[in-house]
Image 1 (tube, rainbow, N blue to C red):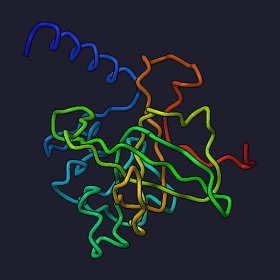
Image 2: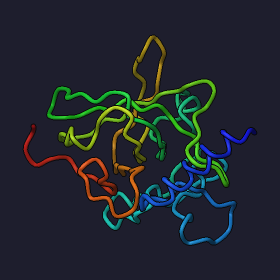
Image 3: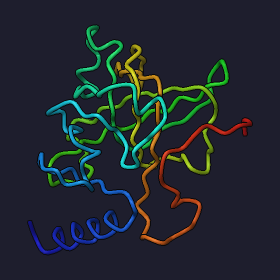
Image 4: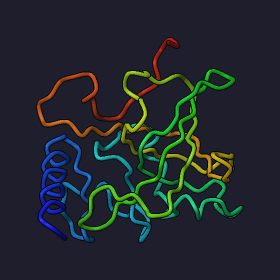
Length: 194
């Protein structure tokens, strides 16, 4: 790795570390900071999806499968609970007062931050209600927990679809920045559509 690469890596580490979200996954230790993200690399089941531990029904629904989006295209994946992170590609309102997002899947692995696989894969997540478009814009990072419900087509490829149980919006802002684009945490749909 050359000096420029190391410098950019260091800046990225500092920015992500200061955002209030710890995207680091520990290597099977009992580190309480990274514990909630265990298993996102696809190596084991995890009991929590989001850095902020949820206390509602979504958090009590059981462990998440270690499936990745490409594996979730199998018929046997239907109904499995997953927790996937990624960058927002699209958001749209659909029939029935629902929103659907398409996310570029990011891998989270031990001692590594958000990693973008060489072969891009996407997933679609849908849920009731409408999310604030000022909080969810292209490239917004997030973690979504939900159940695999089927497949859709995106950019000519089949991608898995999940029903949103919980949506955690990440932020790459410096700690203490209170700008609207720096909001992070568990987000809920708006009470009234935009």
